[in-house]
View 1 (cartoon, helix red, strand yellow):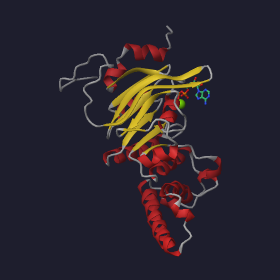
View 2 (cartoon, helix red, strand yellow):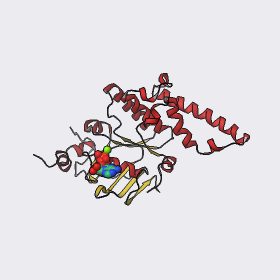
View 3 (tube, rainbow, N blue to C red):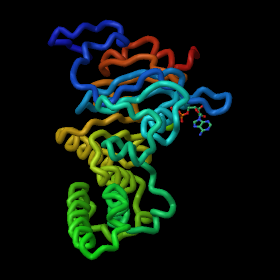
View 4 (tube, rainbow, N blue to C red):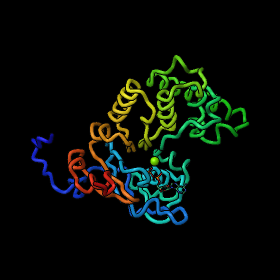
Length: 276
Ligand code: ADP
Ligand code: MG
């Protein structure tokens, strides 16, 4: 229950408290159509630097499509995306990662046959750039070897952080659902991002691993990373995010603190789907 000790006014959740702190990500009037379907219909919101922000909404609300438009997987039909003040609308995913904004990806089939170590090396190498691979000059190669060594160190640090170093040589395909989610997050971190978009990171994860994953996310957040998380478990979002954005039918229905969102009638109505 809200005790509102610090004089927080429980006003309409749409009127967010002044969010004058640094804006990490700003989405404005985003539109994405698939044929006749308007998947995202003028979505606008901001994510504060260093925050853990939740993005919720009923199935089909446009959350995943929004993520895809932000990170360059889809080209939006209208609207703008700004990351750290830079207009990144319509850039390709690699460029987006270069700027420090990544979303997690499911481990693709071809990756399932690679070891966990290889799975982590790959995105880091891609990030290190073409030069690492294309260089044939002996002088350049020395630099490459050093880079490779540094890379491997970084991979091991990440494996240790996620406590999966003991299974570094296991094939990704043999992992449990929860371990796979850890690997997905670890992979995303290898590109040295500043902001992470997580789309249902806890789906199919057992409670023990979920707790672990959440601990890691909180640790990373304490290190300054910004998180935007899509998750259908409302209780989890309400407990772990300080700001919540609610999407419905492609646009933002409400946003605010968990308390304000939980008691917002439009949100409750959207979730009940107008029934009863
Ligand atoms: P959410 O992640 O909130 O469940 P999505 O963004 O996945 O919602 O989907 C929003 C709407 O767009 C849905 O109606 C979905 O069927 C449609 N949609 C999503 N991706 C595609 C696609 N690639 N082609 C056609 N329709 C799509
Ligand atoms: Mg989705």
